[in-house]
Image (cartoon, rainbow, N blue to C red; front, side, top):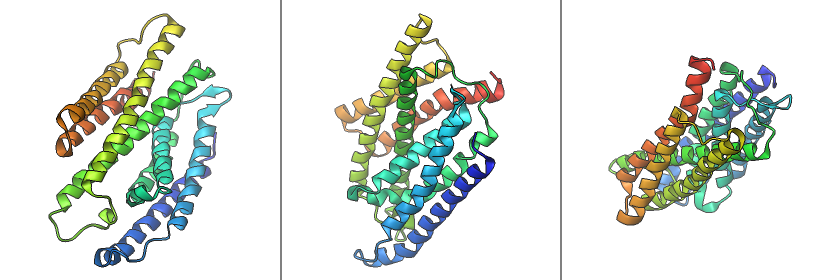
Length: 281
């Protein structure tokens, strides 16, 4: 189990990185608004500052999840892992020139990560997972966490699109929206995220059914977790079908996206919180 100092140091480094990103945005925004060819922030320095807390967070997660040949994956570690994967995917996207405009979200993501890395201290895992040594189980868990992370990014993306759409009619643009791609481009990016997340979610549900059948000889039990899991899958399937058949975009697509994300959060994080924290099971 990592020391408390390690958790606090990682949180502090996330906070410093987020503060630096935010100050850079505030400084550069007026220049870029006045002149599109203005000075661009030092991308390499930003990437390096974010890399350090990401590596430390990854080490902390590994040491707190894999303890004594057991898999300790309670609600605290689950939230921390999802936020870490979300921040990691955003950090990697910064190396792609077409996605560098989205690095404006690193500041709020760093702030969220600074809190999330401390959650396992407040909500420690008390019930190690059974069958944790099975490769199939680890693959199932990794696929689920990747699906959660991609849908988290898609939800942040949808929220950003909503704010950007509302700001289009204002003369003063927040520094958060500087260098962002056009709304149509962001709309296409949103659905790419949803498609990838939907495929991973489908694999998660399918592997969960197979895993349950092989280990317990019965299909997935009807619980709040499975119920909301399939509800979220249905919402995302309807969103993708609406996009293909009726060209859904804008507010309609964002509402469906956020509804599916809420159902997904309730299916795993919500159920684990109720079982572990409220019912202590």
